[in-house]
Amino acid sequence: MPGIDESLLEAMRLPGARGALVVDWISGLALGAVGDAPGGDAEATAAETAELARQAMESGTLAPADDKAAGTAGKEPPVEDLILTGADAYHLLRFVVTTFDSTVFLYLWLDRADGNLALARIRLAEMADRLVLG
Image 1: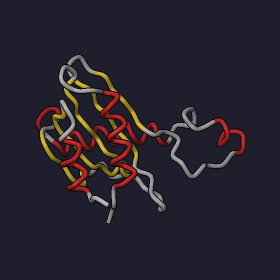
Image 2: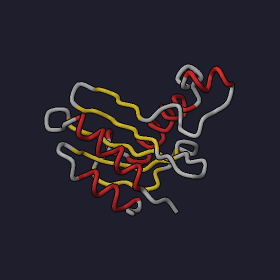
Image 3: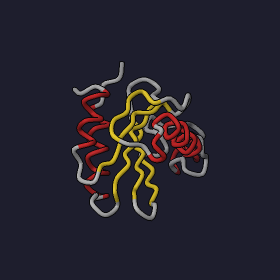
Image 4: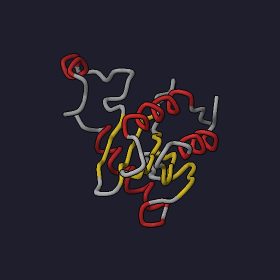
């Protein structure tokens, strides 16, 4: 099972990958980074994407219907991933599910002209499932 560094290197092998991060969405800190970051600053990218992740994870609107009716949170997070589309790039955030209360996501910056969004989403999900933290 790959750790953070191996997962980031795997993400960078995707066609069109510009950069990748593993981020803690509570603190906004990058736990690992490889490649470029929008604006050239991986820490700023981590903090800004963490804010988006936090809003999505804490949103009652995005919670599964079963959880709303029962009034309880399920084992799975309310959101699997976020996809932001820019003029020249895609930004993918994939939440990592663990046996403990994980607050980590994988972030991938993907060139829109050279990248394959569907493939990147599938591979990022596979990486998140295999990622070993700690």
